Structures are given as C-alpha cells and as structure tokens.
Length: 185
Picture: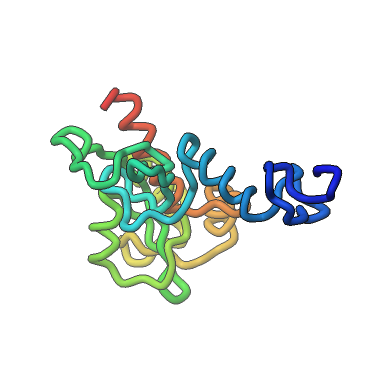
C-alpha cells in the first residue's frame, strides 16, 4: 500500500482489500491474474469431452484448450493410433439388487448397450480377470450368467476397488491417458 493507503499502482488511489495478498486494488489484482493465466492457464470444464481420453476437465489458455488429463489439444483429431487406444476393464454394474461383472475395451459403448442403475466400479483387466472374478463369486452367480446376487464379499471387493471418493470413469480416463503416454503418442 502506498503512504496514501491506495493501490501500489502509480496514480491509483483505490484502497486494496485488507486481506489482499498484494497491495493492489481488486481491478489491478484481476489484471495481474489475467496476465499470469496467459502462461499457466486456467483449469475449467472443457467445452466437450476430450476426444483422446473422454475427460471433461481442461486447461484454458489464450491460444486454446488442453485436456487436463492427457494434454490433448481440444479440436485436434486423434490420429489413428491414439484414437484406438484400448484399455480393458472389468466393470461392475448394479441393476436393482444384482451386480453384473463383465469386461470391455470400450466401456462407454458397451455400457450404452446395457440396462443398469449404477456403475459401481472399474477394475483394470481383461477376460482372464473377469473369469477369475466370476469364479471368486460363483456361489452367488445367477444361472450361469454374468449377474450376481449382492453379498458382503462382493460389496467389500467393490469398495476396495473404489476407495474413498474414487470415480470409476475418472479411473478409466487416467488409464487411457497413461496408455497414450506409454505409447508415446
């Protein structure tokens, strides 16, 4: 603050808020924020899901948007390889009082084909893991299908997969992003 109690910007006599981090008035703090945001970007919701990983979180720069998960430039089309990045998952869906344990390499497309009330969890793995889970919970399997009655052991397994505050779709987005990064695309 200047000796007059105004903003530290020459000629500005607007008094800074008492809890301001710098001796600047609100308009000058916003100008400084905009200047810094040019370099570091602003985290926000993407205008549409990322084409590479499906994330909805992005970083907005004056030059455009980047996905906050996989850093894909919004508006760029995934090349043939990145667009085909496959991450196999075992999914756990709830429909009424039953749980379906299935597997897919494209959960959005597969789950769009199914009737369910809630996505309970994703577990990274393929058909072999799915078959192990079917065997693990076989005592509660419904007529040799992929559907199981809810029971304590299955609920505990799903709770371990989720962890506190874990979003299954967020996990899947991270796995796809990691697969793209490992492939160097």
